[in-house]
Image (cartoon, rainbow over all chains, first blue to last red; front, side, top):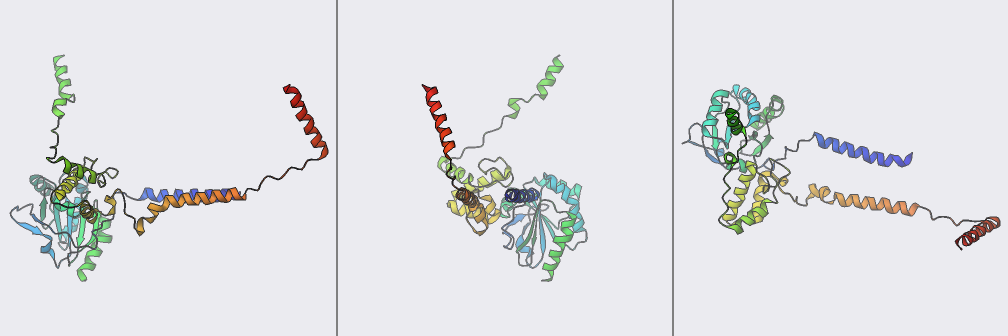
Length: 175
Length: 155
């Protein structure tokens, strides 16, 4: 009887290990950018192409950068959450329109509603690469010193906003 | 009939409508060789089991362009790898670096092999050597008879 105990224990441990592995999401790669200064960009705005916007404009404020595109299906799912977030007006939410056509991006905001203070237009996705974007939508929370404090890959959900994002932004706002 | 034919023609996948223009080959084949060699070391984050050399995802294409551009600007391979790791983490590397967090990944298989070897050695050592058989006179006689019988049969 005893001789079966060890193999059985090893087998059970292996099952547990693989079981946990199944519940993990391989898409969620830990970002090396957390705790690092937000990469510099200066991009034309989506609505007014002649004007630019840079992350430096936001120094001293806690803000959110949301990467979105009109071709992105998950963004459609996320959009109501963003609209809800922006409703109060307290959250500084900025958009980065990623590898999109300008008219498509504008049309999307027109039909779906525009939760952003403004969106910048990254047609080549260069800034996206600097921010390590690989699965739109992605959302960053950036603190007063311009350091990335949080990154979400994939859609924000009401739970994540309530339990993580808003508390974090409040805490950073106090500091 | 003609209508049906026309319809079939319309819906059939026609080679002429699907032909795609080949991507322009780089002017400099040596550079392109370098780009592809390095790209084969980098993971595409969209389709995670492919390298950015293999993948046709738009992001992989962008990253290849980025690599190409950096090489044109004179960056070394290790500078480009650092650039990618800064943005996407060690996960972009198909050959992860040996670090405290990856020790198990690198040496886990070796550890398992060693553990297996230890188990094997212990088992073999524990197995007692077969005892010498004691046989008495009558058994010895019977054995001799059997052996003799064999000899007789063989002849």
